[in-house]
Image (cartoon, rainbow, N blue to C red; front, side, top):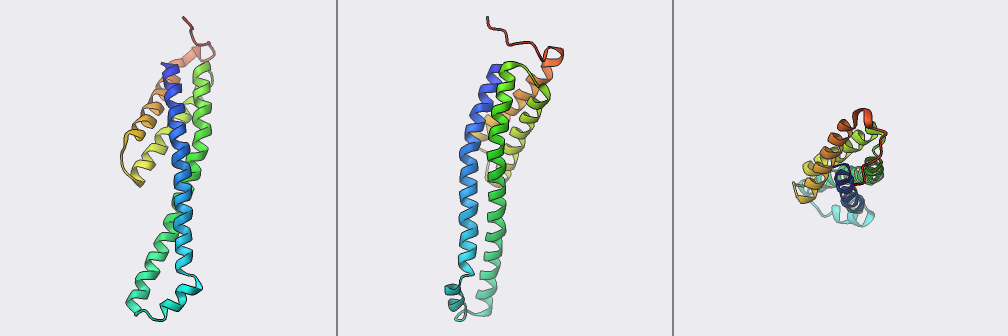
Length: 153
């Protein structure tokens, strides 16, 4: 079961790698659009707008700017989680460092829950949730045998 949990954590890490890059790029693009709305060229067009249109544009610009930064922060969190999940998988394969494995499982579950709240529930979320839960279960079952090697029968 430790090997299966480790493999699932590695698959979740690969999904998090691509998702992290996508969130980082999407957040940067959103922040860029927000900055473009405040550029000098847009200021010329603002002089031709009504007060209501200006207020609506300001509201959209503020929402894009703060939303883009949030997406970028989540993208960085996902990229950091890639290393943590791979290290947790390696420790699962060697049956060592049960505390770190539990932390890696928690990070996997946290990443998926935040991803579900930002977008929607999908099959890639299932992989991360199952991998995190299995990692925590395997780490708890290590108990006193945490330093024993994996059985190769």
